[in-house]
Length: 337
Image (cartoon, rainbow, N blue to C red):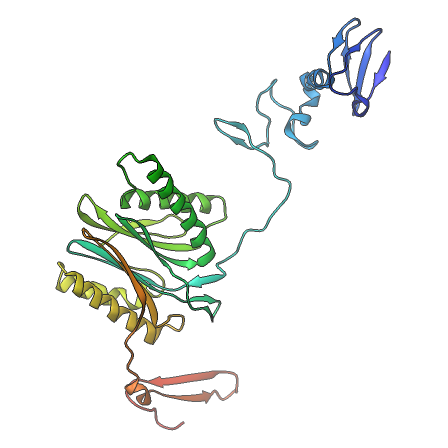
């Protein structure tokens, strides 16, 4: 009997003639090869080892996995990608982001007769710091689609590259078809939900606008894949400050013109700049109609601070000197405290 350890197997391509009995010893498991058998190379020896039920751990990549239920069958506790098979085991653990880092603010979108308009400022903030002041968050996808993005700017750049590659591949096909806004909106829901299911979400809110069969389309997608379609959409703090203004205007005039839609967006941006500390007066405006797509900007929000002197602040300290309260008034100063 000749013992042969796997670490001392012959090199690949060499022939081994078993003269007596060749025994492969590995972790108290003996695999016997009959006398007179010819083993062509180390691959044959390894295959013989894998046929043994107690050696199933070698096919799963570690010594802690359970044996397979049957040869080439599933093993308990392992991860599979059906219908592909056993998934690659990742032993290098990584930490996923717990929140967005450099973020953009609100995005506004409104549909009007014959088209849609989307606007967003060009500021991205690092926490509460207005860090980068020239970051476009409005994208011209193709002749049928425009896109606005809020949230983490790096995640938006990643998806922007993927979308641009999809558009490039479609143009190379040159088959007369192009991506439609409903298709992009549906695709984004799947991508965002897929990343969320992997516990690694893309921290973004998107507004997709375009013309689908000649009709205006406006849809929103958030970081977990929740999606909806409406005639007017606002994300971020705009959902609290700008959306009521947009709803009031749409209820008053459901068939707005392009000029009226632009005036509505300008008014909402002004309110956001006054009330939202993480907004910025410079913005971009994307408009899509049957005539084509235009992305204007950076434009400037009209400002009027003449009423600023009417806002006064006073500080008061509680009796236990533990709480500091800020009192403000839009109608004049409070009485002296």
